[in-house]
Image (tube, rainbow, N blue to C red; front, top):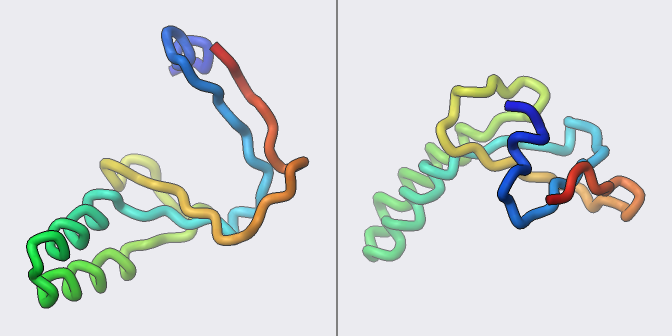
Length: 91
């Protein structure tokens, strides 16, 4: 999908971050939700098991294969200076 098409009818701003991928990881939000749901249901044993699965599945962004996770989330483990953040597109 082209950027212009993506931004059509969106009330948001698309930011571009300049950072070394060695500080970026991809997690699976479905696996995270399984941990969260188990904790909310007070099932600590299941939450522990799901948490282990979740943490083992986190991968570095440099080796992440798009399409392998239905709901990916990028985690950045380093502070970004203001000059590493720029506006890519606005509505």
